[in-house]
Structures are given as structure tokens and as C-alpha cells.
Image (cartoon, rainbow, N blue to C red):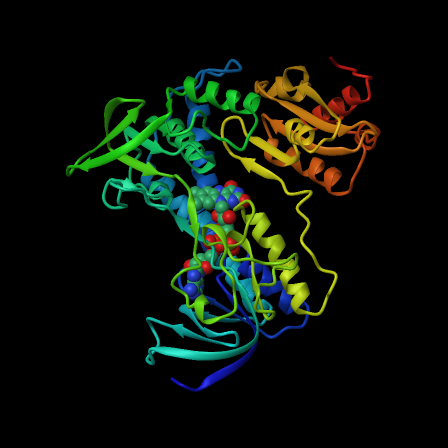
Length: 467
Ligand code: FAD
């Protein structure tokens, strides 16, 4: 109706940005309401980070159970993918999303289901499918927008039937015999690897000269080698032209240079990027400024051009990653609660790709440092010389440290087993402005993969031990 209820702080979107901002604001004393039009947990928990990692894990287990290794002879493994999907949905996703809902309630955060449409800098409407009245208006002091992003569609590949986006790709009812993945960014590469491990024959079509453009060449080469071993065809410089569906398959036409090719597959998954959800929500009626690529312009606190409206996560510039969104959510909550010094700092912002092997980076690469005019050296320790990696029979990869002449760690890259966790120590070090000596002088338990980090620091100091 016309009557506007009053609220102190409203958060729009319950992904890793919104729900963390809501909890943090509540902890800082705000009265918080959170609005979600879809499922609590956003993309990350429902159709992103979490379900993808569940399928990746299932793929690894299935592969391991078919391998003859360590004197263990496999007697074969059978896959019931319906059960895999049920496990992913009910025991992984549901468990986490209901956990988030519980946490919101524990912090006395009001949860409203519906779609937000802004009226001006201080008023919004929530359209709800379930409530009797078409819309409820709310007046607010502070607003945190965390509406996330959605997959980009390309011409002639409308998401329908056998042409799916990442969400459809995560929810396939069976493992495709033949899968075409268009776009070799981290989402495409992760899911291509997962389905290959689950038994699919996969072809990746990538328009640019290389997959995983955000990672260094020697890291990407390890992934390419592994994809090749899985039988995945990676075709670069491939421009997808059109798709034609029948009841039981889809034919994808693509061009490499002037040559036209076709592949017929069970499914075609398009993962060419995501666009921010900043349209269709009435932002034009506020002072919020939308800049390039639909991203909202914000300052170091996430404050938009409307001083009481903040924006965080995939709708602002920077890497579209869950932990970035959560981090910005905390800063925005602090700023709203009166902490003038709260500010985002992306120095120690890690990025992880859950391919085989895992890739992880933090800070800057040697090339980026050189571009900035910094004189740095890169010190690389291979897992082939690490005892724990050898016991795991996973020796592909390395830890590399990038340090300045005075030893300050400005970046690090890890490719190999456990890279997603190993990057945490390096993130702390980069974030704290630590020196390679700090790492070298820290006792690392033996035998661990983390010793590779210490050994890379030894190399940086010119005192290598195990190499
Ligand atoms: P989102 O998680 O997108 O949440 C936004 C929420 O806002 C949604 O629930 C939406 O329904 C709601 N909403 C939008 N508009 C409105 C409105 N008008 N009214 C009410 N509600 C609204 N990141 C990682 O860091 N690690 C990973 O391993 C990783 N894997 C990924 C795998 C896949 C397949 C995908 C697709 C993404 C992955 N990501 C990963 C990216 C990560 O999911 C996003 O960066 C993250 O979810 C962004 O969080 P957010 O809070 O900004 O928005």
C-alpha cells in the first residue's frame, strides 16, 4: 500500500555480500531488514561457489575410485548422478542456506521475501508474489545494495533446453556423454573439469588465445595438461556462431579463423561472463551513479553518490568473488555504524580457481610489479621437491613468491594440491606487509604442503635447502 513502514537499515540481496553486511550491521547495533527475491544465500550458496565445489569433489572421488594406484586395485566405481545431485542439493546447499537463515534470525534481522524497486534515496517498494497486497513500501535511513550478478547470454545461444548457463550446468539431471562449454574462464574451466571427471567428454570453446586469462601462463599450462589427460578438448580462438536443438541433442557451430566447424552434444553450457543486477530496480530514481559495464560507482567505503546508499559485491568494480563481496559488506556495515575510518583495501585479496590442479593468487605477479616500476624477484619452489606432495602423488605445481629488493612480499601464486588453502598464509603475509624472512623464520610443520611456502622464502633469501 501507500503507507511506508520505517526501517533503520535495509539490505537488498542475501548473497555473501548482503547476509554478511546484515549480520555485521546488526552486531554493530543497527536494526536491520534484509530483502531477498529468490533463495537465501544468493548465487554463491545456491548456484555458485558451493554447489560447484560439491560437484568438483564428487568428480575427484569418482576418478580416485577408478584408479589403480598405491598398490590398490580398483574394482570399479558406479555413479548414480541423481544421488550426487541430491547430496549436493540437500546435504550441502540446503544445509548452508538454512544455516544462513538461522544466523539472520539469531541476530534479530527481519527477513522479507520479495523484489526491491527503489522509489527515491529514502524509499523503496518490495513486490512479493506471496503477500496479498502487491507491494509494501519502506522508508529507510541506510540502504546496502548487494544484488549480485547474472549470466550473460550471447546471440543464438538463448538459455533454454539444452543450452544452459552455469546454473543449468550445475543442475543437469545426468552426466552428459558430450558437453560443449563456451567460455574458458574459471567457471567454465572448473565445471568442464568436474564433468570430465564424472565421465563426460568435454570440449571447451574459448574465443581468446587462452583459457583462464587471469592466471599466469605457467599455471594455466598445468591445467591444460590435466584437461588433456582427462580427454577434454580445448579449442582457443573459437568463436561460437549458433546453436540448433533437437529433442535429444544440440549442435554448436563455431569458427576458428575462417573455418567453420560443428559439434553435436547433449548439452551446451555458456559461461562467457556475468553482468551486474543494477538494471530494472529503479536506481534511476535515486542519486546512485551507474558507471561502466553497469557497475555502481562507490568510494572506499562502498558509499554511492547517494550518501545513505551503499553498494557491495558483484555490482561494484573489482573481481566478482564471494569473499570480496563479504569483505565489502563488513566495511559498509561499519561505515553506516559511524566508523569513518572503515575502508576497503584490496592488497590482500586472494583469487582461487578450483581446477586440477587448483590455482591461487594474491597481490601482484612479477610482470605486474615490473609494470609498476617495482624491482622484484620471483622465487619458485616446486611440489616435486615437497615430501607431502610426493606422498599424495600430486607433484605438479609450485609456490612462487614475488618480493621486492628489501624482501617485502608483494604477491604470491600457488598452483597445485591444496592451493586454495595454502594461499591463506600468503594472503596474511601480503596483507600485513611481511618480509620473506618472516616466512622463512616461521617453523612449518613437516611434512606439509605449506613447507613449499617456507622453502620458496628460503630461495628468495638465497638460502635454498631442499632444492
Ligand atoms: P549474489 O550472491 O549474486 O546475491 C545477490 C542476491 O540478490 C541474489 O540472491 C538475488 O536474488 C538478490 N537480488 C537481486 N536483485 C534483487 C532485488 N531487486 N530485490 C531483492 N533481491 C534481489 N566466487 C568465489 O569467491 N569462489 C568461488 O569458488 C566461486 N564459484 C562460483 C561458481 C559459479 C558457478 C558462479 C556462477 C559464481 C561463482 N563465484 C565464486 C562468484 C560468487 O558466486 C559471486 O561473486 C558472489 O555470489 C557475489 O555475491 P553478492 O553478494 O555480490 O551477490
